[in-house]
Image (cartoon, rainbow, N blue to C red; front, side, top):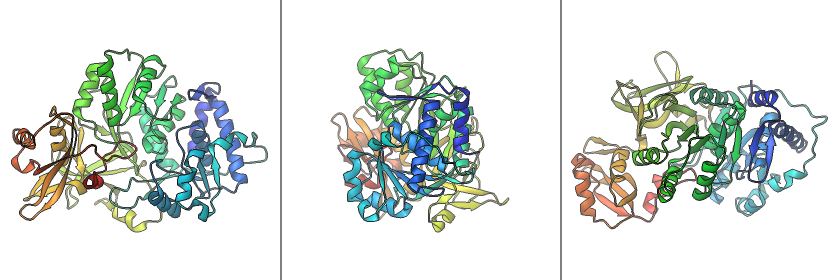
Length: 495
């Protein structure tokens, strides 16, 4: 089976059902797949074929969905690009992925020009031109597409160097989709309010893919706007809402300003792509009566772990493995640690990617074999599994671990404590070299009220071991984040 085959099931069951809507357009399942077939025929006439890359530098719009469905119908490969990327990042991805076709929009052409697209000679199709594509697909036949064929090359955020293209097959994506359909109880009458960018796995796979596979309806929005989004969630037909922690923080602020709202029609609020602060979790629960479901995924693997749909959802935890996913937590020697102990999280399953595009050495470094010869992916995330519940808590990235005087310090523990201080709006902790201790923690804080560093030191000393107390507090206007709200710690020193 391939992705098109999966989406076609819902279309065959309820062809006239609403599949996709925006504030100005609406598409049934039948009309959406017809438009995708016509688009695929047009792409084929332009020379796009099986295995070719189609780079999307495009915002949330129906044309993204239609063109994507056309690309996978052809057996071609989607390369979605973060709209915040500029010349350096774009030039690298263009050169690395060598696309046969670029799909973009008029407002973004100047950015593509700066990245050297003209010199590459790659044809560009604008979303504004797609309405003029021939309507029919006569005389064209879709190639055979296997589950092991590549569907998407999704570039990582590049926090430790140049971004790498994670190769995801149809089977990889199918594994995540089917796991989430079961774990979160997707229903055909669900309506997903989707304001997450489709260039990211959260919006594309967790959101759009699952909704189309379930035969649900997608309310697609160009972006998150706290007032408009809350209005539409309160008065609309949505039953599902997926977001990043930054969005939930903004919604909590808006809810606190407005007072009580009626979310009785909502079935599930889900958070991912970055850790959700316990304070946001608790505040949202108190204001809405809904408990946010936090889960854990990454570009290379799709979704891995989740708090239960029917069961306790614990703040700060990402739950247990999804169907078909296996995990281990290991020490630096690769030995599995006991529950309650800390180590690196390793994953195995059909959801785990094929490797990095044109990077055999990096791919080899990212996997290891156990004693039984099974292949495990090294996530780079440090984790601990609760011995009683089995729930997993993420402690931070392996390369962010601070070792001070031989003691391990996990920045997230300090960050979460600082976030409970009434004068701190945001906090990030990194390690800095120190002649005496090797490394010491340094905190970057965004304040919402005046506070002395001495008060922050005393606050930390009252609740943390002395070696965990930040040696310095650097006050900044804001913390650097990517388009999904994920903290970019490598940019902190420039904040």
